[in-house]
Length: 95
Image 1 (cartoon, rainbow, N blue to C red):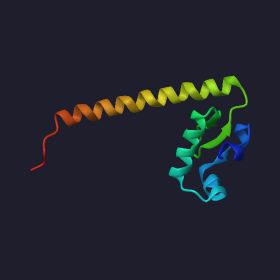
Image 2 (image 1 turned 45 degrees about the vertical axis):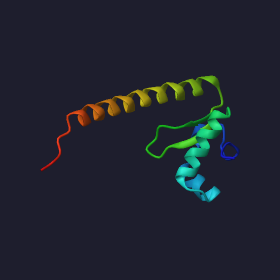
Image 3 (image 1 turned 90 degrees about the horizontal axis):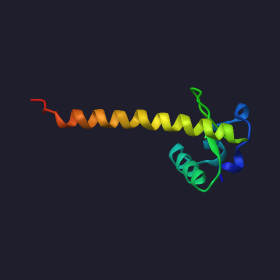
Image 4 (image 1 turned 90 degrees about the vertical axis):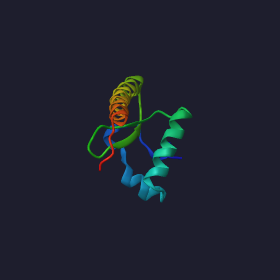
C-alpha cells in the first residue's frame, strides 16, 4: 500500500505529512504499515532530514546505508534504555 506511493528517488521522497494526507491515515498507522511492508521485502528507506522523506531504495548501496544508520540508531536507543534501567535501580521516591 505505502510502497505504491513512493518513488525510487530520495530527492522526491514523500514526507509523513503528505502520506497522511494521501491515505487519510494517522502517523502511527503509516509507520506500522511501513514496518510491515519492510518485513514483506519492500526496500522502504527514510532520509535523514529534519523532515524525513520515505522512498524506495533504487540500489543495494542505498539500502546498505539505511541499514547501517538504523543499526547505529538502535545502539543509541539501547544505551539510553540501559542508562534508564540503571537509574531505576537507584531510584528513590520523592518525599
